Amino acid sequence: MPVPPNRAYAVATGHLATLLGISISSARRRVDLQAARESVRDAAGRVVIAERLIEAARADALSQERLLDQLLVAKPSESNFLDED
Image 1 (cartoon, one colour):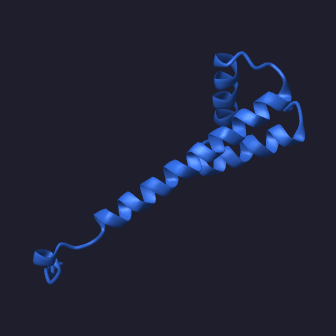
Image 2 (cartoon, rainbow, N blue to C red; image 1 turned 90 degrees about the vertical axis):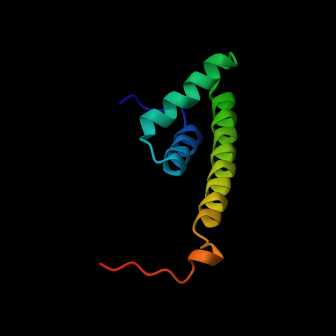
């Protein structure tokens, strides 16, 4: 595995990988693809892109948590329902 260009980039991609539940190389690939789309070639620009993807992942995780909380609330008509094993 190639060595990342700098420590900040490695930390940012590692944090992104943790939030998304993917490997570090997949997170690095996502950042690299986004950098290619935006024509960013320097390491500082890639770190900025990684931080932007981290913020997007956090926002998505928060909305997913809210959705799950809404789905786990029992309806009043089904709140006393028990299932036998």
